[in-house]
Image 1: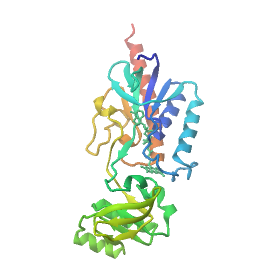
Image 2: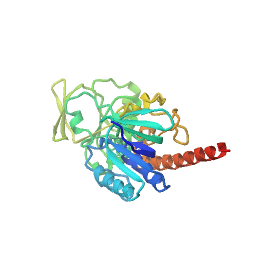
Image 3: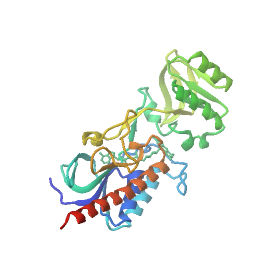
Length: 307
Ligand SMILES: Cc1cc2nc3c(=O)[nH]c(=O)nc-3n(C[C@H](O)[C@H](O)[C@H](O)COP(=O)(O)OP(=O)(O)OC[C@H]3O[C@@H](n4cnc5c(N)ncnc54)[C@H](O)[C@@H]3O)c2cc1C
């Protein structure tokens, strides 16, 4: 199937970063088409926090408002579709899973990251509801109650200590991993309880945690667990198009949000290790402005080459 749509810029991923870039581009008079398959990383969260003017709204409410903002501009369009391929060229060719093809002068990847959820029964059901990735987004609402930190790495141990900012009672759940003597001492000095048993399941009601069940038959009552999981690219289209990834799995970009493939840019979580909504929004704004400027430079080059 061939579609005649051609836009100055096609944005793949219409969440916080993508819609923010679309706004900057539409306000610069660029035609911009956003493709999104509605699978943002925080979709399972009831509310999102630490966002000026939108603090405590649901991710879906914020997204709906953002789509409305962008669609106020005539040169912007939004499609609920999955992009399957970006093919290099001038113009670039963008394919969607239904076989349609679109062309654009530039493509912006705002496809986000997918968190790797531990394979423990109940973990995925509680993800985003009572298992939380970031204390700055969700710890304030959980103050004055017992919380746990899941993990065993040096970073996880530091995070367990950081949770004391909000909670008096903190337990580290290492899920079968030992804790070094020095780390043990540090945790004890912060009055953090340590449980090293392997976890067999998480008991919950509709994603709200009740208890952790251990392999040794014991259990532990808990309402909230913090975790800092590893993540991978949500979509492989950037890598398939030839965009280089960094060791931490993020798309490599320069200071102007250009990837290693000409005409392809990236913004938001897919290329930023600091994962919060306001930073994704800022990243999208920057990318939108830089793309507009690059397109203008390309126009100037063409003018100069004309005799
Ligand atoms: C559980 C959880 C809770 C969070 N809570 C908060 C919070 O309270 N406050 C806060 O500031 N931050 C929070 N965050 C972090 C925040 O959600 C992210 O930083 C932010 O969503 C990143 O925005 P993004 O636009 O880069 O990516 P995402 O929001 O992940 O969006 C990526 C978009 O790309 C689309 N997409 C991917 N591939 C394709 C494709 N091939 N074709 C079409 N569309 C595609 C997806 O459907 C998705 O809509 C939370 C994160 C998680 C995991």
